[in-house]
Image (tube, rainbow, N blue to C red; front, side, top):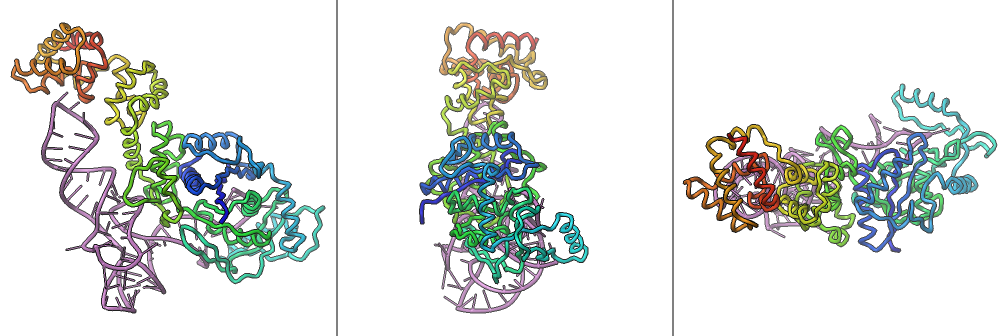
Length: 471
RNA sequence: GACCCCAUCGUCUAGAGGCCCAGGACUCGGCCCUUUCAAGGCCGCAACCAGGGUUCGAAUCCCUGUGGGGUCACCA
């Protein structure tokens, strides 16, 4: 087989959702795996719903995931243009070729007439079948018409599917479909086939919802005289209630995951594991995925999107980044939260102590708040830990710290240990009040780390504030 | 309704006739570690849709049923 050429062909009617992103990802993965090409084509023939904003959103989503395309919008390529609305002449000439060869014909029936027939069929509870009214009428381009494919007499159509195996559909369930509208814009089945033919696509991997389109497309390829590509129909992604994933299941656009503080590595990792596996491995780098991925390891079953597991994957990825890198990734979120985290050394230290505790970048920033802004003392924590009883402890720590010029971890440990021991207290009895004083809450990274990051001056200041509160 | 596809723990999955009274991961529960919270370690709960075949032997192959999903446009 020639080098694989794959494509992702979204219609720009909205943002890039999770399902589309996975389709794009798997196509990209296999193209990179095989050294083939990945083409991005925009199927904007639905003028009602297509928007430039959606095109931008889709490209943005793909870029965030790191899915670069070899041919397509903005990068061009030898088989362009890559927007269907810029390829109308092409569809027209292919349609005319089919008419000339007798494989298609002009149909002059009005939409109203057909709608009526469709209603009648529905009322009679039978499948609507185009009666073939115009099948043998002469071609008169001057009359308003659509182009219909003349269905060849076939018993059945069979094609290979890399994930589902051979699929057969009886010819009796097919009919003369409209392939070009009256306004000259092609319908999906025709546009996609003409484009896949002219863009030399030989492996079509797309959503499961297209399986039923495939038979007619196979016939179209044959009518056009081109080899039929191999197909890979990817199972749908479902929500928790096992229905197709949609907005009501929560966030469905990839960029919303970016905005919620997920890493692209984790998103890619999770998405690919939804329906694909490689033994027992859960975490994959992009390089590993490129190396291991193939369509025949993709399961044939639809899979339920599990936010908990995605969160775990993200957490795992966050832990694997270097603190400096993690801090850098979090920087936009710090800025969005209005926290001054531009000091790289401090930001890195914060990331280091928080990376095991924060599951997303947004979570990390939320947990880091008191490092960059005054501590907001939780009332319950104050009532419990900043009391007349703990005040002497706070004062002792304050005094010890004040007499140390530049405390290090060992000195802090000694200070806390001695303070606890001399008063016959467990270490926790000393650490908790200090924790509340410095962070405002009862849960935080190790208290010595907190002090070291806050610095001596700021720590003394917060201790003073807390001692006042404990009065 | 017709046609197509699918069917292992709650979820993602391993499993391509004996290695499986079914393995890993998420979630959940317990224990350990521990200055809090995490992280980490250990342990546990939990599944082959049903019924028929084929076979010495079936989660794995075949058939039927059931359940779920998808498609039936001058949308994609």
